[in-house]
Image (cartoon, rainbow, N blue to C red):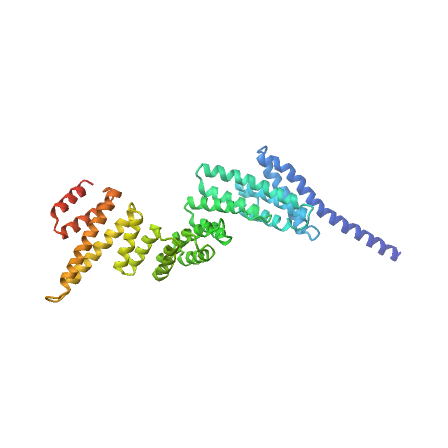
Length: 401
């Protein structure tokens, strides 16, 4: 009798264990069946209230399956967990009271499920990829709509969702990362734009384009050291890229590293001697270094290469005015009958005339409007040259503003 009972108990135990295992597998089946009911209610908009109830039921089934040792590593479980949690993220955007997690957390759970499940075997691999691509298509439609409506922050989020969905099945979706960056950038959300552009720089997106975007955005955010690191790497990878060179120069200037900027510029000009922007940037560096003649030469070279370079004319004029005043101050500090006096006076006169010429050209290109301060500088320059007639004419232009 005892032996019989032991065999019976053992048999019942085996049956019970099989029932538990079957019960957990049935949780996946129940989750799948509930999702099939949920899908048209939610995605086709047939019954949103019904979808809310259905997604809660489906979540319960799949959570039970995900928690049990027999099914927690099932590829089919990961497939439906992704499907159900993506649907849950959408529903939570409408009604956050339906679950204790946020819509973002639900989306993260979806992505993690597909990332874990996609490489577990061949049986549901295609189904997981198909599910992720289907949701990417939905997110892309939202992104495009938001962009057309100029809701750039929302467009950025939707494009980023596209990239994340692709990533969940092992695809680096650089185009969607790029679009997300542009969306955030247009929404003035620079930190999020940088997060996207940094990813592009890391994989050399479109050659040097990723580094240009990342370096430029970090420069605007005053992350100077980071911008220099990114652009220096790109400089090694793409030594002939002009935008990377100019970006590296600007980053060094902004960081106060004039020596680094000067070196980068010399390299840049050697590679592209006919680029007026590089010569202009070189001039601004020499201004920072108080190298007056080199600054003038560089700015004049920029103007020679591009006679309509408005900013170069202004910078040259402002520089020469300041230099002329410095020379006049230096004259005042000389002793009586110092042999340098006439030389310095002549040089100051030359620089002031050069300033007048440059500022007149700037105003010819830019117009008087919004340039009252420039006109005042120009009037002062004419007055210093004892040209009262031109000083009076400038005053008339000032009064007309």
